Structure formats: C-alpha cells, structure tokens
Image (cartoon, rainbow, N blue to C red):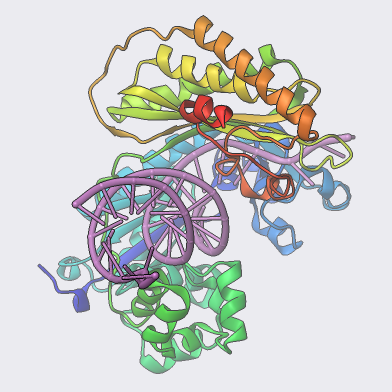
Length: 433
DNA sequence: TCTGGGGTCCTAGGACCC
DNA sequence: TCTGGGGTCCTAGGACCC
C-alpha cells in the first residue's frame, strides 16, 4: 500500500460534456456556438467554448440571451440526459482499461489512481495523451487530463490542461519543476480551487489570499480556524498531502430528491397531486434500486419567486412513516397527505417536489396500505383550524411545516414572515397549545 | 411572457438525559 | 440559599460540488 506522500491521481474530464455529446451526433454543430438548456428550455446548463467566450454564464436564462442568439446564431438545444448518460458509460468503460482503480465522480468526470502503473507508461503525460486519443476516436468526445499527487491537485492540473494550450490538454504536476508549478499557481485565482466557492473566495481575498500559491502558503491551522476542517484539507491537498481517498464504490444515497418546475403554472390540488405522484414513483424507483427503505417523506411546493408581483407562497412538510418502507403506495400516500396539508388555494404553483429522507438499508418491502382517505380528512380538519388561527392573527401568521428543504434562494423573503414550524405528527399537540 | 435538478458535508444550537 | 456539566441526538442553515 502506497503511503499518502506517493499517491498519484488523474482526473479525466469531458470538455463541455452535454454540448460535445450533441456535436458527436450532429457534426454541423461543430463550428457553431451551442448551448444545452435545462428543463422547459429555461436556463443554459452547458456552453460551447464559443458561447463561453461571449461571456454567457452557466445558468443564464435562455430568454435573456435572445440578443446574443440573433447576433451570433447561437444554437439552443433541449437536454437529452439519456444520451449523456450512455456516452458517460462508454467513457468510464474505456477508463477502466487504463486503471483498475476508477472513481466515477460525476457524469463527465472520473478520478483514476495511477499508483503502481509507472512501469506501463513512459510518463503520466503519455498515458493521458493515449486516453485522450482513444476516447476521441471511440466516442468523438474531447477530454482533458490532469495529474497530481492529490485529488485537488489533479483537479487543478485539469483546469490548467483546459486553459493553457501549451499543455495540449494534458497537464501533470507530478513531473513539473517547483519553479514552473509556482509560476502557474501565482497566476491562478484561488477561486478555481476545488472546494473554494464564491463565498469562501471572497473571504480569502479579504485575508489577502488571492492566488492558489497564496492558499498553498497559508497556515493550515489558520485556515481551519477560519473555515473549518474541509478547507484545511483543501489546503493540505494543495501542498501535495493526499487527504481525500479514491472512492471506487459509490455509497448508497442518503436522500433522494425528485422535483421539477412546471412549464405552465399549476393551480389546483389535483394538478399538484398528479405531479407529486409522478415524482414519488421516480424517487421510489431509485430507492428500491439501491435497496434502501425510507423513514420520512418530505413534500414541498412553491410559487414562482421571479414573479414578485404575484402572491408568493412556499411550504414543505416532512411526513414521518411509522415504519420504514419502500412500498410506493405508502410513499405516495404520505406525500399526498403532506401535499394536502400544505396546499393553499389562490396561488399559481411553479414547482413541486418530494424528498425521501432517513434512508437505511432494507429489502424490497410491502407495507400496510395507507388509510389515505381518513388521513386526508384529518388533514383537512387541521387546515381548517390553521385557517382559523390565521384569520385571528392575520394572514400567514401561522405556517405549517418548515420550508428549509426547498431551494434556499427562493425562500428567503418568504421566511421572514412569522413562521410556526412543526412536523406532521406533532401537529395535534402544537394546535392544542 | 420566459429563470434547472440533483447531491454532499459541516457546524451551531436546542432538547433531553444522566 | 446555593442553581453543573458532559454526552448525544436532532434540526436548520450555510457552504460546496456537478
């Protein structure tokens, strides 16, 4: 077993994955600026290099790009996740022929352990170029390869491979002179480091830590005091001390979410029920596929936060299950029960979703059928009581459930209203007080 | 008019117990 | 009258990732 100081990792990452997949099957897209769009063709989730060069950010709404689309002939494509998943699998198969130790990190990225493979290749760079050529030939997808003595360094090397043409898409920090590495690190913003997001980058800048080299030079103790153990690890990894191991087998999910924005607003409870039933079916499939049972079902709904002129409402409720299960009828019963409790008339709903929580290992299981009609009637009585309270204390003085599990950005304004939070099973007691 | 859909980990603070 | 302290569990929230 190699010790931490002699680890070598490679990160293989597909350039502009979704766009490249589309181009693989439609060569006419190769010389054009292309974006792939999210659900309902709402936002841009992948950009070709031409579009990045125009300054279009990840997540830009499609309708805000109309001028650029006219001016530069940008092609907008609806996403095709089945295709991307299939292409991903092909790449991962190729990578497994290069190293027995592969961690599939995301749909377009994998870490490889290169430990003990030194004798097979003249250098990691030669291996990286071989990988790149084979993937290009077999799938038409362009990849970049970064090599480093920690995952964080491999990530950073991958960034350099992408940005600096001199490296020809493969960058190896493990065979680079200290001076050259330092020269590079002094010219890369600290925000490019894996684990340093917008907020932390801003704080680091305030501390006069601007470049990768600055962070590498910082004292891990200070970093830990200011940012916690995660950033301390990042700092150590930059110094070449591997703290994050290769995770070859994906652990089972700890929660499973299924949610979607609606193309057209939903108004009635029946519309939301239909959507939520679909989400439960999808989440339940994933739950059973990983052979887990679920201890609680969270359901949430939300109006369109971008339409501030409309009355806003967002709410969520966690319904604990008496016994953990993966029986779809029970999951659906619980979700619909929760939905009935948080549904309010008079709003235009933009989004709904479910989250399966408190997951634990468990076999496929049949449960007792939920007595939905009776529970539903109970929830209607509870909602009547809540409405009475709200009439007495002013509209929306009392909320059911906690909204915290729905997307935060949409919730903040809403949460400023006095909010009474409770769990479904505690509701009768709460109402009695 | 039109604004994605998933996940993870860590921490602080409160409830509760002894 | 004097009014502890440590451990554990849970939740909400903040940060990050793709």
